[in-house]
Length: 176
Image 1 (tube, rainbow, N blue to C red):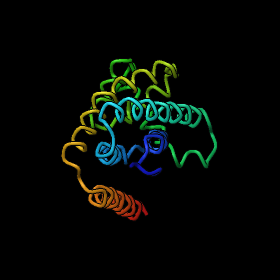
Image 2: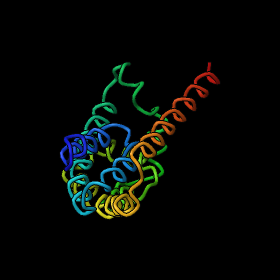
Image 3: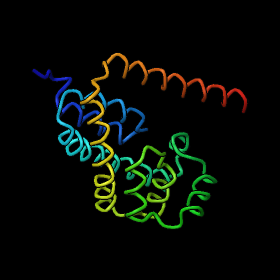
Image 4: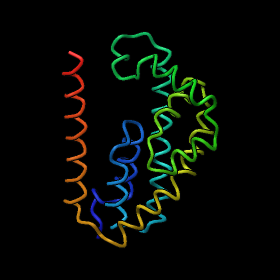
């Protein structure tokens, strides 16, 4: 019997929030919930929830890029980085967005370009969803077959989070 915390709706909520924020827990969530549910369910429902969260993130990025509020600037990349991303990725095409989501590689530059270019939300959702399907299915299948204990997965996530915090702290001390 699957409890509330291990239910598909909870996975969808977690992937929505993850997609709307920094997407650092996606792999751990898919491996964990892959142990508990069929990989196709995790890929289909999780992919839709994650795509919806990514659309929210795109909307927030678009708002932030158009905003001149000082408190928003701290959550956004520097204008120079946006300009560099726009110059490097001239068009945030459907295929580029789909491929970026279908791999574990960082897709931040494409997200920034999509936000700066005013990429349509519906097309962005579909591209993210279609890209997530195979990637999410493979990770859920790995979790289903190997059944990695939850404490190992979430411990690894905690270590990754700690590593990111330490890295940012070191970088901020170098700037000061």
